[in-house]
Length: 65
Image 1 (cartoon, rainbow, N blue to C red):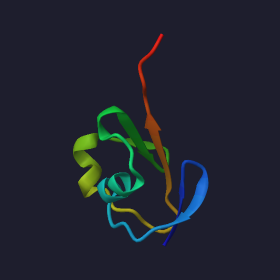
Image 2 (cartoon, rainbow, N blue to C red):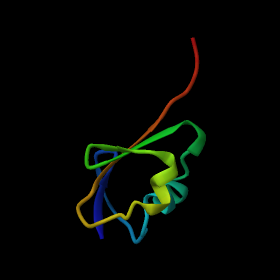
Image 3 (tube, one colour):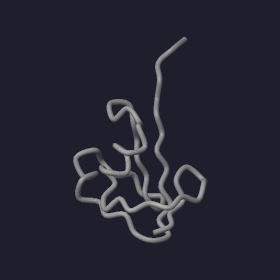
C-alpha cells in the first residue's frame, strides 16, 4: 500500500504503526507519532493499523543547548 511518511510517498506492507516505526529505525524513546493529523500515544502504536493513503509524521526529539 502507498502512504505518505514525513511528507514523502512510500510503499509499505506494515500492518501497524508499531511495525512501521520499528522498520523505519526511529528511536522509540524520543518519538511522537501522528497519523492523519492525530497524535497517537505510544501505548496505542501496536493497535493502530496502517491504511492506504495514510499520512504519517514521526518526530524525534533530541536534547541540547
